[in-house]
Length: 309
Image (cartoon, rainbow, N blue to C red; front, side):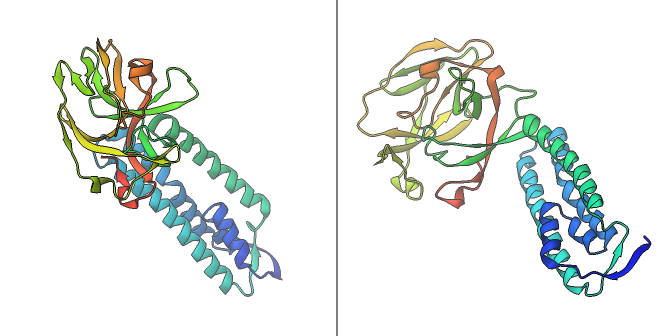
């Protein structure tokens, strides 16, 4: 690029950092490094299409770790761009303006890249994965109030939910609200609760009591009172998961029913504090939004970060 003026213009670190925060690469362009800036811009945009490609081509168990790695990579790219732009600005003591050192160029680059990024992000959220926050204790001890998780929205593109899956679905009674519950039975299977014992296809689900120490780092309160009870590992077909039974509760009953076609029957892991299929009936598969796969912001205990078990 040709020089347009001989005027010396000091590059300000705070401006370079601010531009890098707005979009990685702008800080480098501001400091006269056009090629380096475009490289940072490209690298910053790259994780989104790569993530979309991963979801489109793979159903591997390594899919979500790869996506999380892409997210972390995007953060690392921006941090590197900020540090690099600050270093460039610090060393540009007698800077000569270039043709591209104009606000209109910065705005044009920002609009072009942002448009592509927003479009990719929208597609990612609508078709591939979505973040949710859980405000209630209905799936304690697996999911705590305040937990934030990622739902895999392509998990059921070619298959239906199966027993043991934690699914996100539209509340049958209020379509503005999303619910998360555990799949207990699928279409054609029978469900019954007698004396607080759960039966699927006339077989009582086995559960093993776990030590109270299992709850040491995740104890919660419900209505400002400590939630007291016992935690069990329940076996449902090939799936095993934890459930919570609050103490001093009367035996539960649910009349035997057969799950209709294109539906699944769901329960909360916190069996005494959950609104689920016992109240609103089986869930229509068409209303299932995805499978809860990963905690990205766990409440209370960060050792729970990662794949939901």
